[in-house]
Image (cartoon, rainbow, N blue to C red):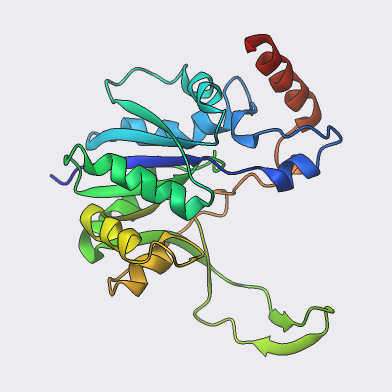
Length: 243
């Protein structure tokens, strides 16, 4: 049976989210609560019920490792080891550092790379994406574009009507054969890519689109979290108490 590990990304700056709040202080969206648990908790929870999961690597922004640990401390105990690392200057660098960390253990055939700000991911979506990854070497959930698409210039003037057939909005988790995605990250270390699947394709490997889920949204702005202002204040108070 193929094993896999999880990279949970939480090393971003959350600038768009913070700028949509009245509070001018930076607030990491992954650490706010949706109900009794944090966004990061919900993004990780469905993976823990999968019997082939070996370990979890969490990428954190510098100075936020303790916040990430606190955000996940109430996860059910499944005996799965968690490692928290400080990420890099970009998401790509953070993922590469996490892959290098995983390479020390040599116990995972595949790796799932999951946005820490996607709290509505379902276990069935993970299972389907992993199944496709095992068959094709790589897979990620996606949804076909249904709206008309236009390309515009810097002034907002339409320059082209883009054919939407074959275009998809992609989500996470993105799941890959571990050795191949590690190789791709090492080979294209200095190249900016939009996501891990782009590097995987550049390395010559196949990525399959798995049917995505409209509910699998990524928290981006304050409107994505009910009562975000109050929850942001509560988080900042907790963080201040720990100092």
